[in-house]
Length: 119
Image 1: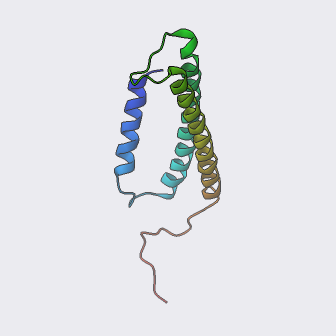
Image 2: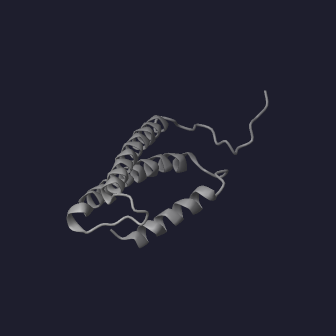
Image 3: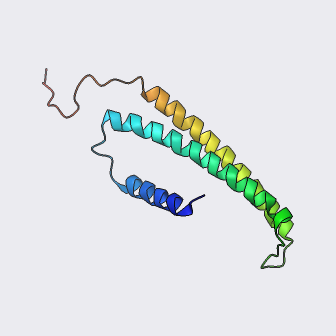
């Protein structure tokens, strides 16, 4: 896992999300739907990979907790939260895919920037 790439990707998403969407075209919306779907799918994979690694810590390392809590309790909590994240990302992926699918049937026949003739 390359966390530098992950961090750069997150920074790029924050930057893109912070820009106003006033000049977004129909194609941009369609593409964004696909990218949201792909991002959620990738986050499912990442959370699953982290869950596997974190879940293996007790068998691979001697652990201690900086507050004196049983490390096994913390590992169990961390795995539980990663499972919840995986479910949340899976739900997000379903919604993003449904949005993308629904929007893919929309066609724009009139340029919204063109002046409309009054009747």
